[in-house]
Length: 371
Image (cartoon, rainbow, N blue to C red; front, side):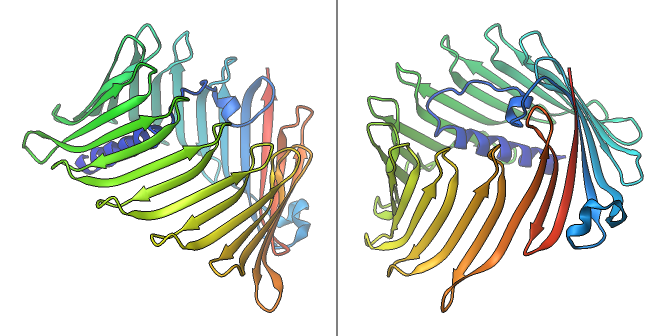
């Protein structure tokens, strides 16, 4: 259980570190929107078929050995997932997940049942009047707490403190946050506990922003106050990052990356320089009029082509072909992937067949029910 708790702490900490790069709050999407589905979806049955004959005759039932896996998901009218049922190959239930939400759409309960119908995991969330998640309690199959998180916010809804507790109720991890007058995070301190000792300052982060709220500098310091790593970033007038530089503990440049964009904001060029400011890699991309990347070329430091990728999309912007080419005497394809889709009246795909180098790889069907 302790090993599981440590893993949980690591995953949560990593997630928050990634999110620290985002300076503006994103509009919360429901589960249907996150799946890029269109319409009032009530349920989705996903069936992955096992392929018996590796050829294009996959559409014939004789080449399918029933399903390899099947998942059934249900959604409420607000577009949030309320139940998941995963089936074994023989059709029996492998696992069931039940989720509950409050009137504001916040998830307050997450239950996991095994094939016998016994609860193996339970997550209970609590929220304040502003909809901020202030408490997460994790229970095992016996109903005993193995992890707990308590979060505090300031009057502007900014997270100012996170505390994690283990199965013994000990506070073994703390994060403290500070913000500027615009709500951008400017400081974070991470405290951890060594075995039965006291909490100690393990890592400290400092962030700086430009007048537009873009993060332009981040510094990471160790428990002794020594610099571990530093990043600086520059942006153009449209808010696109045009330069990113990483520094080592001696504040010497390790890697510099320069980005160029087209008039539509698509990243068309990426130039990577080493610590001696010598170009080590160049990526050049092309896009269609919808912003889909259709070609990528990777060049070595001497300007020779190292790798080429090509992409094609259907009218619904789903990728239907991917070609990987490697230059030898001439540029030849080393991998060709392509997909065939079928759609329902709402333009949600209901069948997807994938191929690689002319050989069938998989077939997935989605049976979608609407309100």
